[in-house]
Image 1 (tube, rainbow, N blue to C red):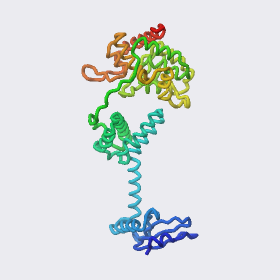
Image 2: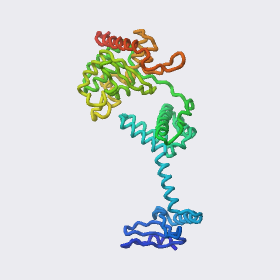
Image 3: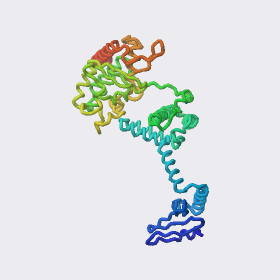
Image 4: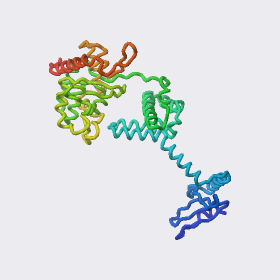
Length: 397
């Protein structure tokens, strides 16, 4: 019968040898000095041996408990080796289908599609820290209350926006799990309205025409790589979301019809951006530099990835526009305000062009071609107006 003292004293030999304990349990000592617990038994008349664990990670008491479990299975007519194999397979499947594993898989997919470094860092934090409470649960077993409990911890810390961001990201993971056949429900969708609402924060923007003129002159005087310069000049002309601008693909741009067609990131709906003469000129000028890339604005490091999500922001800061004055998202507020209050275009035309969810009188979403002819005129008028502001003398001169 083995004791802890005897186990520690066992020395390796040129060949594997085993020392018996009781009821089929033994310790196997290998030439390397490694020691493994084995359970020897007979099943269907054949001598068999099951692996239980490694010593000293599995102590003597735990090894005897594992042997007793195996003996119980044997008495019930089951082969302990087959049962262990089935348990390992089930564990592997559960581990591979945990919320965290699927979230990692989705994140890797999004990175291959060009997700920016900042977004990767934020989503990694969501997986590892903010949603740690459900990370190791099989995705099909994550319930709405379990997800809410994880989000409530974020609320308790006062990070309301992070809680909403975590819920949104969890929703993407559940949708991906459903699409890949590993879950049937999206618990995040059941939490609509369950979280505290964050206070709305508006992106800083320049909306005074004189200040807009100053901004546009600074943009046109700014010197950087052709990609950054083109992105800066195109941003106010098309006023799409920053992520949509930097991930623009040449395959979605038709310079002959003067249209840029893509799926809006916020609504998931098809969207059309009419390209003014000025917008086409920017793209024509950029084309020789990036036409071999999938992206209109590829990264400086690799043409297979889009431009950094911080490129526009950094350029604005270099030009002297701080975060409280102007942001990359601020071009949208600029257009919304001036198109309505100065140029007098219909609000629904503007909302359509901003790719907001606009409904008809019957509550149905308008299709992407709604008011397209009018929006083409509006986009050209907008570009002409910006040209006028840029070429006008500033009030201070």
